[in-house]
Length: 117
Length: 115
Image (cartoon, rainbow over all chains, first blue to last red; front, top):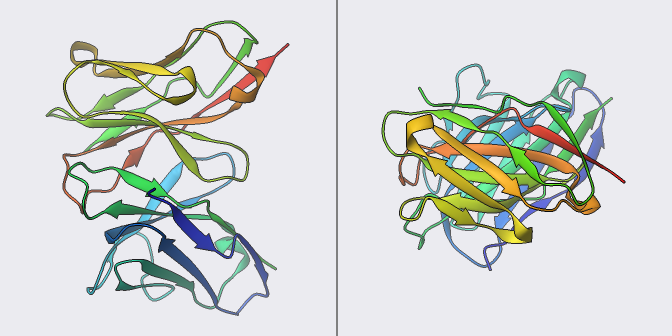
């Protein structure tokens, strides 16, 4: 149980286009999902916290108009990178917290590698 | 603010040798601590976690970690390393069990295993 999927697993796009990444909790309901960004050989940096039915909370320095997050249901959150540029190329990882779990354990998706040409 | 320090950027061990990866955290109360492993191009897999109780925690793949409050440490250990353990290891801390609390990650330790 507690499986999180991401789609697509990798994407290549042209500069100026928008890319949508989906994060799904497959076998549990997730009230909260987190989006992280990881540059090569670096750690995960939190971008935003997404709560079902409400606006996402962005970390300092993350442009909310560029990285649009929608958490429309208890099993799906999306991250849209708008007007992507080469510097947005990165590994994007989501995680989800199970509603039924007592403790703050998060389950991570496999990640999406974005390359902007 | 919370922080996690993994002092070792890269460690190389021989297959069959023991392993200890260091992790120190900065947090006022009892933290919720995690160790994750990441293979190249992959997501994170939870190795083990500590919330309360016994300070020696057993995880998957033969890993264990010991929480030492006096040292603010949560070091990961394995008695005998296998070549398949080569990966990036991340220590993380959460402030309590609030559902809106994200994890704070250390910078990671890359483990190489040689024959």
